[in-house]
Image (cartoon, rainbow, N blue to C red; front, side, top):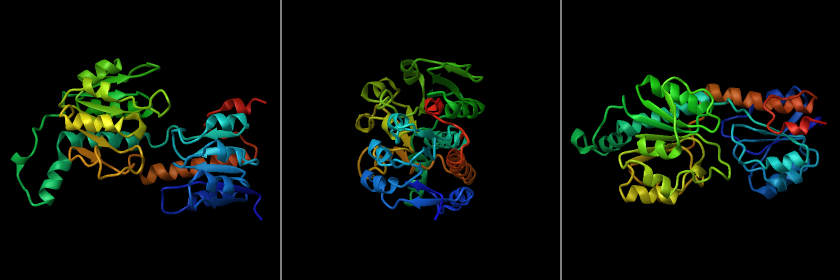
Length: 321
């Protein structure tokens, strides 16, 4: 019988070799959930010393059902799927990997910008359906000299800004901290950013204050020739307002890697709009990023269960006393 039990709520990769190998070093058994509803997870959590979660929600009911649990480790950056307040109240450590997939998400956002600008998806669908006609496409513009607005200049936003500047894009950015801006980046209000940008890329966490950061009022400020890009969290956008703006010709298009809900109904607007590129929450993925994420998260669990402080504790008050 293993010394520890670790509940894994969900995962998005082919196997669990890295997790099992790391946890085996401390004689921990990995219990993998087959259903992600709260009741199912609560039953499995009842005997768990630790919980690892990718996208599945770990609400108060699951945490309260786990009397032995000492750590909830997020396989990712955002914490909106974990009830951190309840974990803290029960003196359970919560960790994440805040510098995970920075390069991948920035690259994906930039790839979406390039695809929107050069109408790659449009021409791909046209040619595959038998139409080989340059004149059938929308007007193309040179990317260099246009303006990218980055909403949220955190680690991913800063990485994107550096890559975009190298392409000759002007960069505006919103930032709560307004720590030193990278070269070529100008801090801006959200209102100015929306009205001046040719591309708006979202890079915010999803909390109550940021839900529907982009709604009808914000979309009305954008140029009708502008594009909206979201590789952060689906809930940052009011999808009904986005669909309405596209239908009214008040926006040129969008690229969405994250959805609300996820997965969305692809037969409905805005996802079925030919001017909208949709990717299936793929921005974070690369062989390099996944291996790093999985090993570090499993290591966090192993460290805390064996008496060492793990990296990236998001509720350090639990450690004090």
